[in-house]
View: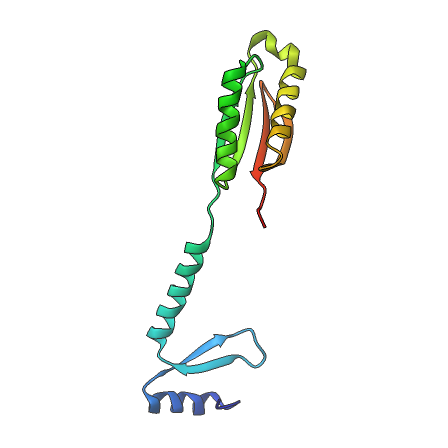
Length: 147
C-alpha cells in the first residue's frame, strides 16, 4: 500500500517498475489508481465478465396454444408440456384462441385458464392474469423459485 501521492510521482513509480498506472474507480474521491500490468488487468476483467455470463440463467418464453372446446386428452398433453416447461425454469404463455361464435363464450375460455392456473400452482405462479387481446385470451406463468 503506497497511499495518496501526486500523479507525476505515481507515473514515475509505474515507469520504474515497467508497469502501467491504471485508474480503478474514477468516481471515488480521491480517484483510486493502481500500478499494475494493464493487459493482465483487462484479461482478468474479461474472465470475470465471462464467468458472470455463464452463471446467468436465460429464461425462454414457451407457448402453449389451446382452444375453448379442447378435449380431455389434448388438455392433459398441454398441461404436461406446460408443467415440463415450468419445471425447466422457463416462462409459459398460454394462448386461448377463439374462432367464430366461440367469442360469445369467453367465460368457458376464462374458466379453462383458471383451471390451468390452479393445477399448475405448485410449479408456477401467474405473471400476467388472463386478458383478452382481440380473438385471443392470454395468460403468462413463470416458474416458482425453489429457494
